[in-house]
Length: 244
Image 1 (cartoon, rainbow, N blue to C red):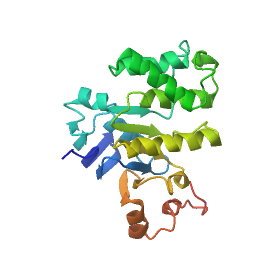
Image 2: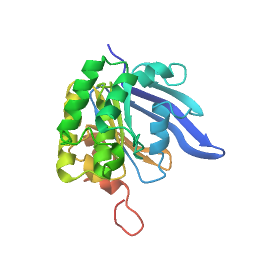
Image 3: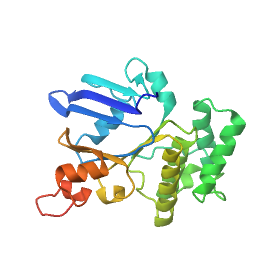
């Protein structure tokens, strides 16, 4: 039986004396669309940086696809695709070259990587512009290219941080269909956002973080029931009564 996609076991992380995460535990099953939810400063970015091996946690244990993120980081990196919130691309490359570079870094066959890159970019409506330099692209086009690069090698675990930022309505719908298909093929998706409405009817499981601690965790239905919520956005009312 395959191990879970992600296991966090009593993870704490400190920046100097400040605790960004405190005793956080959760498991993500394979094939899940997992929503990582919380307001700014809740610990979402720290969690993502730990599971993508960009940050070493202070205490506890973390496994991705059965591999320890500290001692088996290379194995972890080979199994994930990561599209961070900040879109930092090689402006001197075309979108096609950028996505093909990601394929090569994940040791894909060059011809297979080229076909996959073209397929993903065309799926996002960039078929007529994929050979233009990324430096000439709009924010939305750059976001599409980044997502394509993160998905080109069909990773076991796809990690997305605020992926809809800059995408128009049509691109958002295409993106959601791609994510559903990815998960339906037995892969796992982590979707981090502070816009909770996006995940209603989309995520299968969620983790709600507040001040570095777990507020709720499980299937969407289970979290609704455990916290007495009609919708996920009700978990984080701000002092004015509006939602984050």
